Image (cartoon, rainbow, N blue to C red; front, side):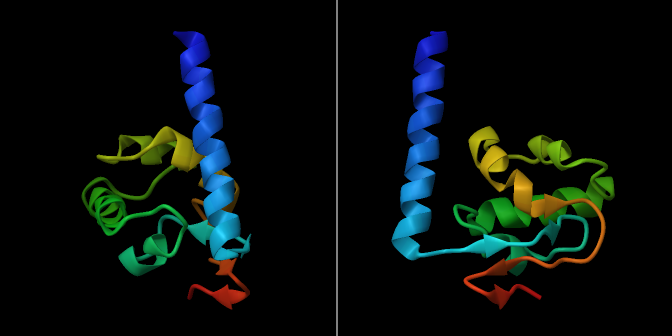
Length: 105
């Protein structure tokens, strides 16, 4: 079972890299998850409108996220996606995230 989970995680990671390369998306900087709006989350590769809305709704009800891992409390959050996006997510500071050299904000 553990091998199957590891294999599945590897396949998802590989698929993520393939999708990123297929769209030519280059991500740099960070997105402040405590100030970002739905449209900002949606610009992240693999983030649906539903999960973006769930993140903002959760934050509005429960207050700011203390750590990025608090996103796992959001309904529909996927651990693999979060692990892939972790380098680009922050709980404080200015949003500096750019995708394909275009700023999100």
